[in-house]
Image (cartoon, rainbow, N blue to C red):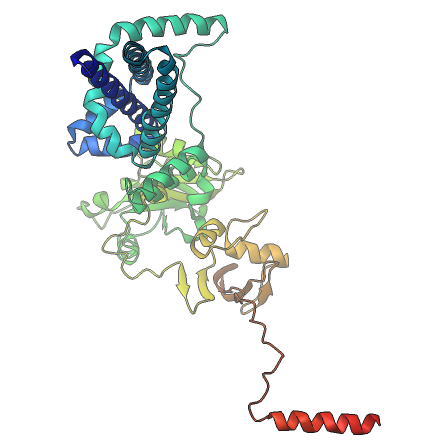
Length: 452
């Protein structure tokens, strides 16, 4: 083979190699996890930043990959035809072309694409700089192809520049789960993301502190009485009512209270602050925005009749997203669910059914009530007595543990025991080793004698 033949063969080999490069790069960039690449970019990886730049111009990247593949494949086939025709004649051209097609299929398509699917992140990072180079190199060609494709797509009343549909909530959660499995986000971060979606659908009545649990101050209380309530509750803000507890007229702040100098002539109205009111079915996401805008730390929830149903603090809203926020005064608080044994739990009567279901993997439901105590009342159609027990349809036993102020304080919850199917024991017994051959022969003789 002369020098020109060697050059032609070298060009063919390089073309097949470039075909493999474009195939693997295109597949890897199309399947790589963008969240993971973004995390690597934030950590300072220069190649990850290049990959993000490429992915943000996906149309140009696709045009570059396709253009590169067609150029190198056409180059390889052309030089194979020239090399075989000049060296061996036309009869070898068809054979060489067939072998080239097989080589391009295996080496240029199947093998690199399969590898890229298995290692998209690694290959994307390795190919990022060459792909970016070819994107700049093929800019004129990619521009012409892009404009041509856009014109053709308009003939069919479509626009390739238009972005796809927005991701649904379920799709986004699936994406979050996949990112968590790949180690991109931590378990706590995933939980916060899930809580944000729940928070959007949550209403004020689902989060509020019920009026019966509110620690409040009478408008006509003396200084020492208010001081004792602040000491006992350890709260920094207290609701103020006039005449009856449903009539909340404002709140007082401990900062204003401790700065008082004239304790003898103290009156609650001197430090009374204006209350912020909202209704039960207010979305918590909207409520948080409103409270932030007016710098309100407490909101009082009113029912449809104008009576106080409960209250919400900004901390309560934040806890719906980030979880329990504890301070130095929360150390002695009891857990809402106390484990007695593997199947028995002591649950606060006011605990939400959704929270119990999430914690214990149960499926408690109620049409009219949100809490475990409400579920018992719904099942009995009356207020239960202390120690009264019911068994609901799912087989869960609920026993009332304490009644106070016409409400269920705690519930002893016993889950059905999960039993596995017992293994079937064989009823066939193995022959005893003591049952000898002589015994068998004796039995046979007795049977023959009885027949005769």
